[in-house]
Length: 267
Image 1 (cartoon, rainbow, N blue to C red):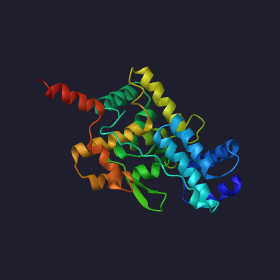
Image 2 (tube, rainbow, N blue to C red; image 1 turned 45 degrees about the vertical axis):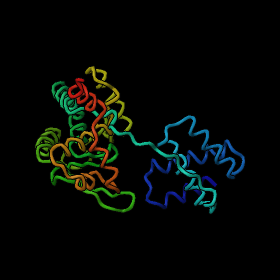
Image 3 (cartoon, helix red, strand yellow; image 1 turned 90 degrees about the vertical axis):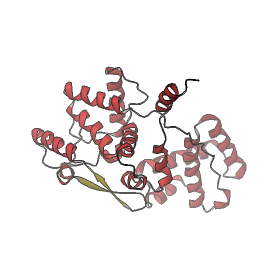
């Protein structure tokens, strides 16, 4: 049944990682609960709520609900838990720290990593999208990405990054193909990027909590709104389905809120 479910998902536009997550969730449920019934589904939901964050709970429940659709048991679908949105952004690298890290990597000759974080922070690319960038895209200044719903989103590479990256690729003799490769000449993995960023955070005495791939996408959004206050355009650039998702970037980070309170509140 699980194999059939996997084949069913493969025919959809879901990302590979999402399919893996859904299949794992369903396999776990079927291994731990004898029957697919309301009582067992609610017991599983209770287990998730006690042990995981709301976002993770909902991801698991999404997988279960997809399976119930597949098994034509929609009536058993489980309701998601409410995610309380915070009124501040957490764990976003500051502009100063981003520039500091870039400078350190450049100075110490880690050119590839210098460009990895620059591309993420200057394009707003998700780390999985970063891996699709080819030398050809750098030359034309953009690449087109296809979202889950079949929509096209254009990822723009700004002029100053384009110029410097072109020089770097020329020095390496890269005329075409993917630009971010590991030592075996294969495309670097998202996990490899995350691990290496933690290593650099430690090396340069930075807060490891803010040095992770998605943090640079957050930095792109914050910097963009600071310089060009157009939320609708930012939503398009980031590939958000709803402008409500983008609205979080109008909020301050926790450290920014602290600085303002420290400065303003003197009574």
